[in-house]
Image (cartoon, rainbow, N blue to C red; front, top):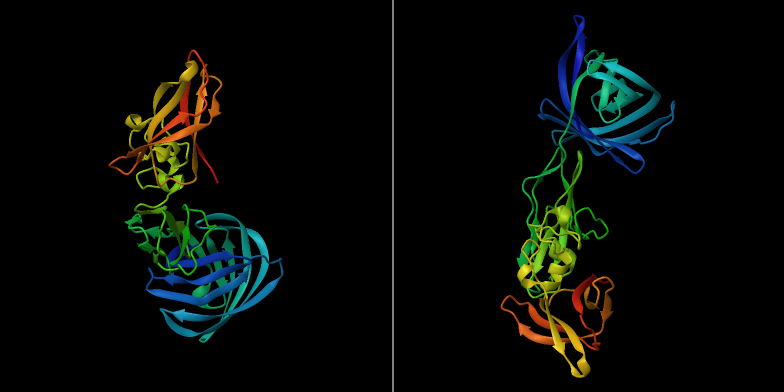
Length: 372
């Protein structure tokens, strides 16, 4: 929770701006961590080592003590001990506005240059809105204005990679934010934290040798919170892939990457294009299955479909369905006939009804399903 605050001192009947600074707080587990502040547009930076960990919950009248190493502009200044007491929860009106639910705190800092004692009012999501202290320089400081600091930002959209089968690749991002930025890489789609990459905590990450398409993303964190990158797709030549990989290609809108979505607007889903080897944003009209009626002995007619398949596609199954009324479709057993390989690497096949029936009319269609 970094907030740029402009505080003023009371003089001549008005508050005039005297100090501007950024306060940095984060909440983790049961602690509210104060990491320090930047004063005078960042020219004076104060940092509290691993953070002063205030209890995130404290009853009125309760108190807590903590210690941390203090750094001024990166130079160790000494050890600071702090005590905090919650005096109440109040509504406070200052020049910047009226703030409800303010924590009224008594804070004592024991620093190498002396002891500083303040009464402070902290507003949720804003920080200190009023400060009173025994020292003249801290007498009656009140908040004039505040602006929440921008979260971590990526300098440019991170890019994926295309590599040979069995090769590695290095993915990298450039992020900026208030204070230091930390990183954690994950495997999967952006926002899915189920598979963190162990040890991948820098701005760049080198993958292991890959024998299948893979998706990665990175979470960048600072005192302002966290920002997630887009999904970075690594395409591996002549290697297996899943429909989620196929749909994660950067030209596909993020909101149109589900198997049933049709991002190209041609009515053909990502799943079907994946099965047929058609790029998600290209028209599949010329690649759709072609129906054939093959006469057999006894007046039977076998229905068949001719089409190209994606030979690297994994996690799907093909099914042949037939009907005589276009209402009730029945999945039937089929034979697979190999038709050779196209120049683009897709494989020509024919799915032919294995046990055809006698019917005056028949229709056939291809069904593709995702399987575990």
